Image (cartoon, rainbow, N blue to C red; front, top):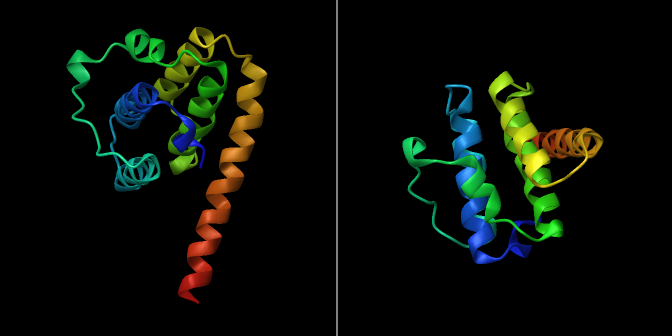
Length: 132
């Protein structure tokens, strides 16, 4: 929803983070793949080639310097985290590292979580309405 506001290097960093989170619980699901594809569409870019073995979370997070961009990244990543309606332990760890690195208050993530869950519910409802 807000990813088009990121700079090019921030978009690549966001996709790296998204791929890492999507794989962090050991289940890179079709729903997560679809969400990442939608992220790419929104940012008008091709998906990246992601190699978990070369991934360094702090190098990735350092690509996102602007405070507004950091909030966008956390907000948008929540949809991916809650795509299965559950915060897995590994996802929680990644989220906490991002919040710390971005110097964002953990309470902010609570509000972002609720927003993401609401948006996911609305998206599901919209799809159901189309199929009625």
